[in-house]
Structures are given as C-alpha cells and as structure tokens.
Amino acid sequence: MKIPIRHEFPRLISTLAALLVACDEAPPASTPAPSVVARPAEIQALPESESNKGSRLTQLRAERLAVVDQVALWKWKNARPIEDPAREAKVLDSVEQLAADRGLDRAEARKFFESLMAEARQRQHALHDGWRKSGPPADASAIEIDQLRQKIDRLTPQLLDAWGHSVRRP
Image 1 (cartoon, one colour):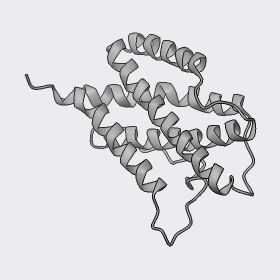
Image 2 (image 1 turned 90 degrees about the vertical axis):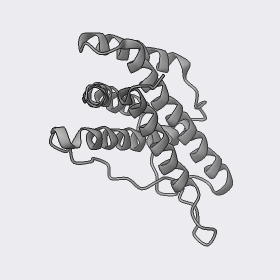
Image 3 (image 1 turned 180 degrees about the vertical axis):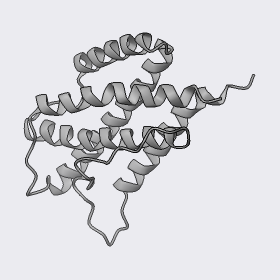
Image 4 (image 1 turned 120 degrees about the vertical axis):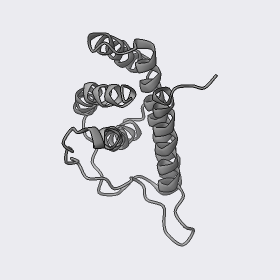
C-alpha cells in the first residue's frame, strides 16, 4: 500500500532538517566546531502563497531551531536537563487542541510536533557535547527560559498552520 505524499512530507522535512543539523555539527577537521550555529535572530516571513508553503514550513522550523539553540544555552548555564517531559506534554496537548480547531488530524499533528521535539533534543545534546569539549561561546548570554518558551509558543500555531497547508496540497 502506497502512503499518500501528504503523510511523507513531515518525515521528509524531519530528515532534511536532521541532515542540516548533521552538517552543522560536523565541520571539516581544519575548521573549529562552532559552539552555537549562527542564525539570524529574526527571519523575514515569506508571503503565504501556494508555491512557498513548503518554504514557509522550512523557514519556521529554522526559526524554531534558532530558539532551540538558545534553550540549550540556558539549560547549559543553569545546569538543567535537556529532557523536559512536562513541558513537552503541555505543548503537545496544545498542538492537539489547535489541530482540532483547524480541522487537522490531531494524531498526525502530534506526530509532526513530536518529531520537532526529538529534533530539538538531538540538537541540544549535540550542542552540550560540543560545549563539554570546548566550552560555550564566551560572548553568549542566556535569554531567560520564559522568554524562550514564549517564542516557541508563538511559533507553534504558525508551524501547525504551515504544516496543515503542506499536508492539504493536492
């Protein structure tokens, strides 16, 4: 049985994002490893059109990863564990409700966000591993976790909408 493309899109995006993360984590031996991947603080929003729905989703994922880098730094500086099951459960409950409000499949939306969270944990572990070897960036100051969570909370419905548009493509 062939799985419809709309169900493969989140997996494809996750795979591509993981490859990008892997590329960021493995620079050539002659280049010192970055302690935080440089990303612009705010990424310009693309206009929502039929031709860039996938790009919008990719862009929002990149924004989320930029926040994840800052979350990793806050956790590092505050000696907090990377895993936060209570926070993840809260976000996933919110995603399911937002999906239902938008007429999206709650279970599929949850799976998509679970993949985003797995990606975030993987990235945070990679950053912490690098910092254990070479230390965190000297000039980096950690943004308070409440501010970072607010950024993620603002991105969540936007990511859900972009994902919903992508899975609704004919």
